[in-house]
Image 1 (tube, one colour):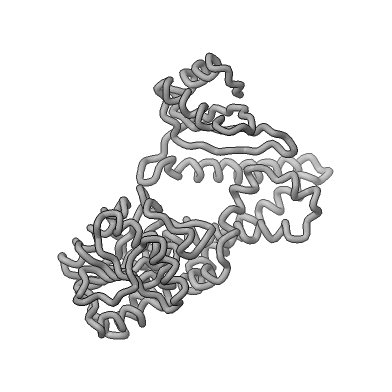
Image 2 (cartoon, helix red, strand yellow):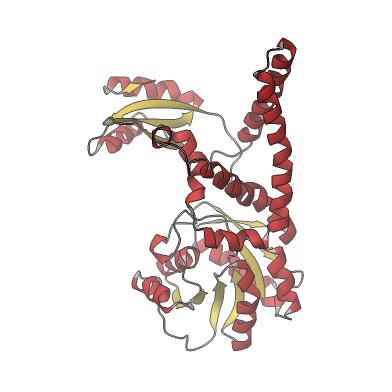
Amino acid sequence: MEDALVVGAGLIGTSVALALKARGVSVHLRDVDSVTARIAASLGAGTLEVPRGTVDLAIVAVPPRLVPDVLAGLQAEGVARHYTDVASVKAGPQQDIIALACDTACYVGGHPMAGGERSGPLAARPDLFAGCNWVLTPMPDTETETLNSTLELVAMCGAVPVVMEAAAHDRAVGLVSHAPHVVASLVATLLEQAEERAVSLAGPGLRDLTRIAASDPTLWVDILSANALVVADLLEELSTGLGDAVAGLRAMAATDEDKRSGGARTVENLLCRGRSGRARISGKRGTQPEQYETVTVVIGDQPGELARLFTDASRAGVNVEDVHLEHSAGQLTGQVHLSVTRDLAEVLRAALRNHGWRHH
């Protein structure tokens, strides 16, 4: 790939452009918002100049509902030899693309499974897709050369290609992304009118659960509207379990011993099933789930403390698989939760003790 056109200079589009630029690709940027396009260009994502000829690949980075019309327009211009998009919903746009008689032989749908709470070009970075799954949904007549061009894009962005059928993709992202976003927002609404003292007690569990609720609502309305029925079905299924949980909890507060026992069994079953489902999530992107042990270290709020902690772990020959920070309310200390493989947990604890760290 020598040159590319990125249409849409938001978080994903600009991150794609930055990744391609880092690999020596000549990138042209286009956005209906000239200010957004200029910001992306000023970050080094590419040039606003119109390509002199046909580029190798055009990447459509606009909301799902806009993909078909933008793709049709680009193909009418003949701007590229191959086309792809990065929209988070595939089936609906794919149907509209067919209805608009777009040339599907030179098109592959795509969806990089990456993002963040912040949107816009200022939140973009070239390593956003490193190690993440990038779903590709080729059409029945997609040419091999077009698929290969898109695979090259995925490789240049450091992502892992996953080929899926469009409808299967939408069901999957509804389960792992779209429905959880609605649930996180519902939980966060409980905080809206809560007393300040209650909210101040929030710990890492609530922060983790509601983190994605901080995302741009307008962007998410676009995403959810394109996958509305799938998400509605998942939430309806979830509501059944929520109803069982409510009934079980009310039974646990009853005076009758049998009711309390029955309610406890219902709630315990829910928690066990939740733990079982959680265990199926891979600790690392694209790998099988692995059991890790957590070593919790008390850390002070001084410059360089985290760096010193990781240096001591590295000298002990321990690879930290994941890390989570927990701040102590009103104190200048916190806790760092280090996830390591079980065979190295005691090695890490011993090394940290030798370097004067307090751990749990």
